[in-house]
Amino acid sequence: MQTSLIFEMQEVVLDSNLVASKRVFDMLKRTGSRSAICNFGKGIGSFRLFKELKPDFVKIDASLMGNIERDSANQQFVRMIIDVAHRMDCRVIAEGVEHLEQKQILENMYIDGVQGFLIARPSPL
Image (cartoon, helix red, strand yellow):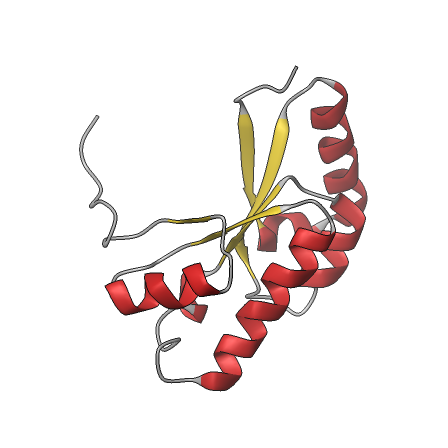
């Protein structure tokens, strides 16, 4: 049975104490919950965190989406994140998607999901 409860934690917080972060992620797995690293790809330790914590999801930082339509190096970096994550049985969500062209590029890279103003604007509870 897989739960729909997903705990999302920021990369910078997780990177500040890897030992404690690993304990939290292990506990989440044992209790049947899932985990996500948000703002992924922003810090230098992104892939080390990914390797150690083995999250169920990574959410690619919005800063990597801003110029993806015109920046082929950025596209290759995002494609690499998606490829590595999929090989590790991890789903990938792109944060900060604001334009249809961004969404189409990401879909061609087999992204698992997108979020941002293109999909919906924040709304009050």
